[in-house]
Length: 292
Image 1: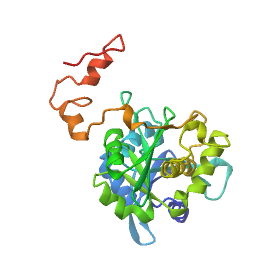
Image 2 (image 1 turned 120 degrees about the vertical axis):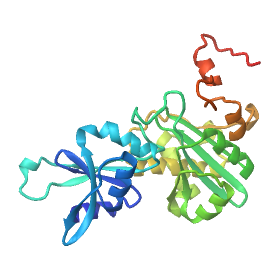
Image 3 (image 1 turned 60 degrees about the vertical axis):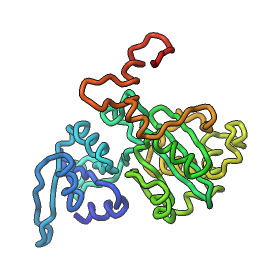
Image 4 (image 1 turned 90 degrees about the horizontal axis):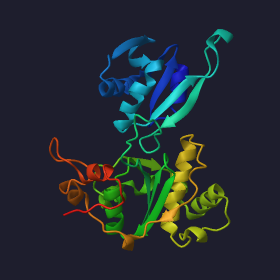
């Protein structure tokens, strides 16, 4: 358990799936949560006289159980054996090989073929708000900046799976956007404009952001930089497909709030067997749809 505890302290906000032989095990509070989400048996083991909760599943069932944990809004750290147990006489060396979160999931069982899976980041300076959205599976990277009301509309329409915010702003931003959003808090230095700008320039291998038309949108740049930092932190290093970043031009769209979208049944039906607008579009053979 010493090895487990040492690794767990590095990932306190994630469920740690700890590889033990042919199983991935969870312990303590992680085990209680895992057993509840996966509906698997919760047991316990003696750890120096104190019982410790235990829940696990076979390693070959990872693709069955991992999506359920992520869809439940959990961050999951996968801790694998880094050496062959047969080649050592001591405790097998282990380490986290992947950190999966709702906003950066790439598993086919987690992603929906008919909708994006956006990771978002929010930045605020006085009354100016910036937001960035990234779908890591497609490379779609979008930013916007404006009033609280304008950013509120975007959050409702993009419906991100995970939202990154500055830890020091968590109370004010939760008050500004009082929804059940899956927030994750990052340290203050991540949301510094110089750090963010340098991150974007380095990623896109450019000397200026003018070509993307966002060079003056400092809060948007800050939010986008936080997303790139988060990808690195979660060990998502294959990001060459994120080849550009675009400003969301509000004037080019008609925006609807989540209640209007729901009542019009654009994406989800309100009753069993009902047909949504996206269902109709999916069946068309041209780019034109007439809605009466």
